[in-house]
Length: 196
Image 1 (cartoon, rainbow, N blue to C red):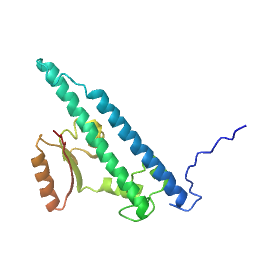
Image 2: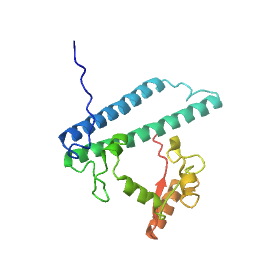
Image 3: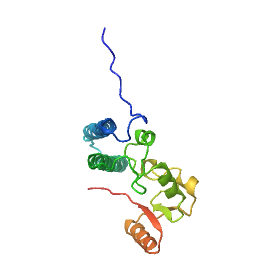
Image 4: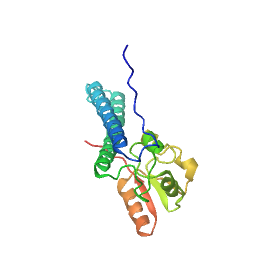
């Protein structure tokens, strides 16, 4: 009879960020990165044969353009997530992984297991949320919750003073953010990048 191998789960009884913890989080991050890349490659294969782009029907062209736009946003979001995963892997190598970027205190195993790319402790994250100087501005960030609902729920949580919809103009969004930063505010500008 063959023994079942136990799946390792980090424990608070072990020394924080010991070799076992680092190995566990490295494997989790690499697995997550591999899944993202695999799903993006599969999506590219499935969507690469779009023949409506050059269709004579304007409705087909518009539908195709919308589909491509959504696809590009998803790819951009995945790319950013992969960058965060790579950054977390780098922090594991340099020994700073698992520690808050602001306080240098341990982030905690439960939080890291829920969000392995976390860079702030719960306390630091809550402090950011309470900071009235921080606000989000961008296209559809309030009413529609941003691309893929990335800012969904922020309007209800923080109100119209801290979650601000702007016109579709990236240069204006950046200009407002720069002006606000110069005046001591902490803006988070939310813009969309569509690659050709």
